[in-house]
Image (cartoon, rainbow, N blue to C red; front, side, top):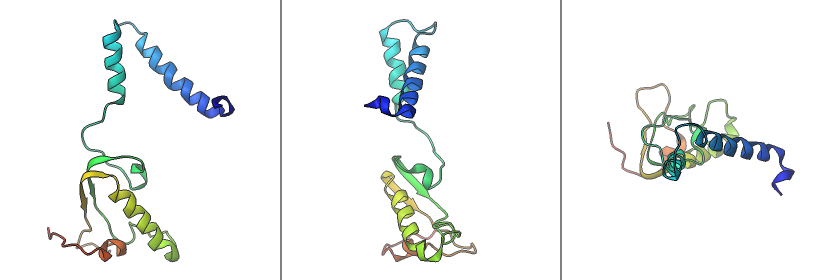
Length: 129
């Protein structure tokens, strides 16, 4: 029963009341225009999204470009050493599983950190840039 979860009820009401309010404003005339507005609210976005590893959980993109895949960044240097491997694997999974078509994993050279340990274990012919 949804009424057992007040926060969910509040969010549900806020979302649908907002939609109905916008649809009932002057300027909306006819069902076709209302349908167009609903479709636009839920259409897939185009363009570039810049986000953190944690911020993309649950998202999906045609192309994912991940850079800075270096120890101290993935996982963060604040992670305890006994947890680093697990944390790194989880973050690499999140990054890798967001791409529908193209996945680019970049661990730059010339910085004071080395490539992420989990990424380095993958047997793959990497491109030199």
